[in-house]
Image 1 (spheres, one colour):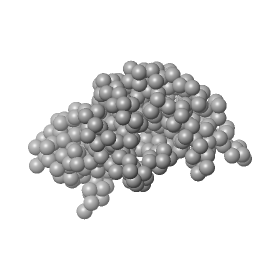
Image 2 (cartoon, rainbow, N blue to C red):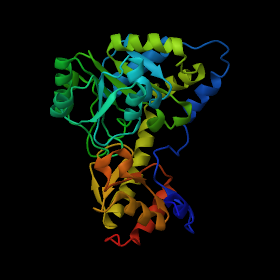
Image 3 (cartoon, rainbow, N blue to C red):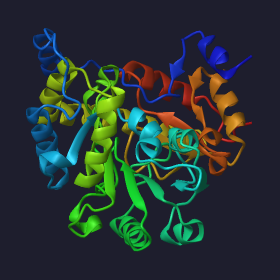
Image 4 (cartoon, one colour):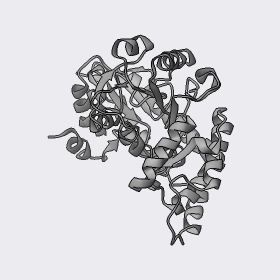
Length: 354
């Protein structure tokens, strides 16, 4: 029986910690803004309204100490859409190499393959020198591991990329969820050296504002790259709907709901992490973001099966690359009640896992 079916058959119901989809309500301020903008008979701007671009720039300055001109930001239909299509939109193809992290969200590779590029797994400037990619993906805080890259690690990759004509793109959709380390944007002066040339950051409101269903994200950085992306996106209809643009302004301009959501995830993490450790798992990285990256030293599928027997569904680590073959990913995206149920069930799991 598949692990999901076994977990669902538990008398107390499934605790689904396998996916990172938000479960808490969308903030009222965002919903009200969406409703108020629902009369939208005309076509929206692909570049976003001036108000939206100003809100994006203001949010990046206020929350991440990154200074941006309005022309250096671009709204996207969620962040996954941009991740999947970026190599194609930038004109990369069969002669190009795209570097993705050794542990990585699969869409980085999917997007490179869609464009006909060759994919390599690489994490350091030394790795880049070996493979010489045209596009380098960073992800900090990382999915699945929650690893936070240091300023020095990112700066060394930026330096190599600029010396060798490569672009660096950082997926920062978990940057608002710090736990034991404080993530820094690729666009911060300590990493970028004060110039955004050859750099793009990708952001999402899905996690921090519980609007995954709205499909809103944005990219920011090198104004010339943003202009190139905008020109193509205008012609292929990659446009954020007008009511969603207005709702995004409400989310970007309000920090209160973000603080409340971060604290909700912190509370769930503080309950779940020690219970996982008591059950015999070692929690690695997991310094920020929505996930706990865990291993007992066994095959990831053995851990998935053992946890499914007690009604807990987690993601197998090998979904994110060979380096995850002995890990599983626990998501924090469950209600307080379901997290408490997971803690109770983990208490009865033998630490040996056998």
